[in-house]
Structures are given as C-alpha cells and as structure tokens.
Image (tube, rainbow, N blue to C red; front, top):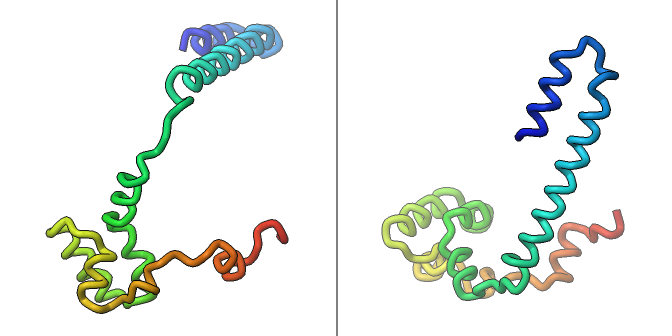
Length: 127
C-alpha cells in the first residue's frame, strides 16, 4: 500500500511521467518480490502436506444443490426442482432422493469413464 501511495504522490506532483518512471518501476519490482516471498512462505508453511478429506468432499458433492443442473436434462426440470426442494428441507442427498423415487437408476448415477467423457466432448489435445 505504501509503495503505491508513493508512486501516486510522485506522479500527481510532477507534470511529466518521465520523472516518476524510476520510482514506479522500483515499486513495481519491489512489490513483485514481496509477493513472491509471501507465496513461497505460504506454500512452505501452510500448503505443503495438505491432503483432501475424500469422504467430506464426496459428502459436499452429493449434498450440493448444484446437482440440479446435471439432473435436469436427465429427469426433467420439474422433478429436479422437487428433489432440490426436498433435499433442502430434509438434508438428504439429491442422488439418494432420485434413487428413492425411482427417477434414476444406479447405472445412470455412476460417472462415465474418462475415455467415454473424452469421446463425448472431444479430446482437448486434438484442438
């Protein structure tokens, strides 16, 4: 914040930008160095060694209301909305509710293999 204020004050006080270019360049490079050191420190002290809790992540995915978007083309908008409303009130997963009501089968809920998904959307590497 201080380096930006110094550069702004310098530019505002001079009529020509050429007078302020050295301090702007110095402050930019200094800020970049501080940001780099902060990123390295953050990675070393906080980020390295973090592992995901797979069970908790799976819970968040299966209980997310965003699944309405994926279920809507398969079971229809009205059914998706009713499942979403019920999931919000009961706290159950949307996939579980769709299975209970018989609107989806277990096979439809299983994720497609990666090779099938690539064929479906087209291989990105071929673009």
